[in-house]
Length: 426
Image (cartoon, rainbow, N blue to C red; front, side, top):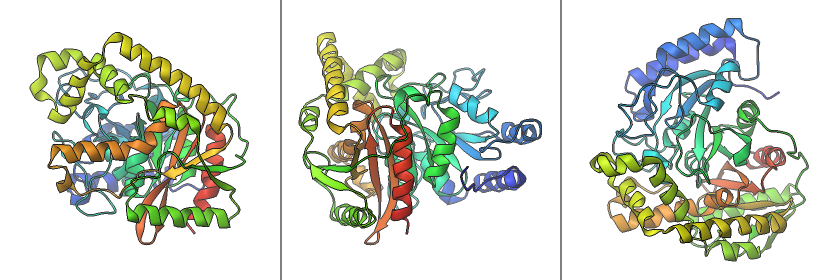
C-alpha cells in the first residue's frame, strides 16, 4: 500500500472544492478541462458506500479527452467529433478505475487528436504551465498534467504516443508513466497511432502512478520485479542540443543518483544509430490519417491547421515505404531488447525547458521545437518499451529525469523509479 493523499472520508469535500475552482473560472485552471462530469462524479461518490474499499477509493481522476466516458462525447480535443453521440460505456481502463472506487472529474484538454508534444489547442484554449509563466504545458496530455500539478485531481489518465504523458509531466513537475503498450487496454480510446499509442497515468508520486497502473493493467504475468544492474546514459543519442539549464540540472541529478549508490555508465548503444535513420513520422501521420480520413476529406476547415498539415503528409507515403518502416521497426525492437537487456536507459525527458507561447508564432520554430521536445521520449514508444519521467529541481530549474526499460519490465522500472524518486526529492 502507498501513502495516499485521498480517502473516502475526504472525497466529498475535495470534489466540491475542485468543481468550485473550475466554476469560478480560476485563471490557474482555465482550459484544463473540455468537459466536467459533475453529476456523474456525485454518483461515483454515492457508489463508494456500496463497493469494497480499494487503494483507489475516493481518488479523484481526470480523463484525457480521448477516452470514452459513459454519457459524454469524446472529442479528442477537436470540433470534428463534437456532434458524435455520447459514449454508451466507459473505455476499458476508465471503467476499471470507476469500479475500483475512483471518482471521475472530467475530460481534460489536449492537443487536437493528440498530434504534437506541445499541448497547444486553438479550439479549447491551452492551459498554462504550472511552473513557468507564459510557457506551454507540453502535450499532448496537457490538461491532465496541469490538473494534477494544480491539485485538482490525484491522478490523470493520458495517452503516450511519443511522450504525451511524460513531456507534460516533465514540464509541470510531476511523474508521468508510459507502460508497456500491451499491458493496458486501449478499447474505448481513440487512436493517434495504433502502433505506438500507450495508456498511462500522471500523478505527483510514483506510488500513485503504480496504484492506478495496478488497476488498469490487465497483465502483470511475466513482468519482472528484478532491480536493474545498471543505468546507461547513451553517448550516441539524446544528450545533444540540451539547453544549458537542462544539462546542468541533469548533471546534478546524475551526481545525486551516483552518490546514492546507483551504478551509472556512459556508453553507446549501436541500435540507437540505426534508430535515428527510421522515418518515425510515418507512424502517426499514416495511422492518424486512416482514423480521421472522412473528416479530413469533408471538413478540413474544422481542424487545427497544424494538425491538418501533419495529416496531409500521410499522402507522401506509399504502401511499400510504410511496410518497410514497419519491418525496420521490428528489427530495431529486437536489437534494443538485446542491447539494453535488463539495464535502465537514463536521459533528460526533454532537452529544453518549457518554451514560451510566443516562440511558436513562426511555423518553422513550431516544427523545430516540436521535434526536439518529442525526440527523447519517442524512443520508448518506437522500441515498444516502458518509460517514466521523474521531476527534479536542480540549479533552480525544473526538469524531467527519464528512466526507460525494455518491454515487460514495468514493475522493475517502477521499483527503480521509486528508489530514484527518494534520492531526487531529498
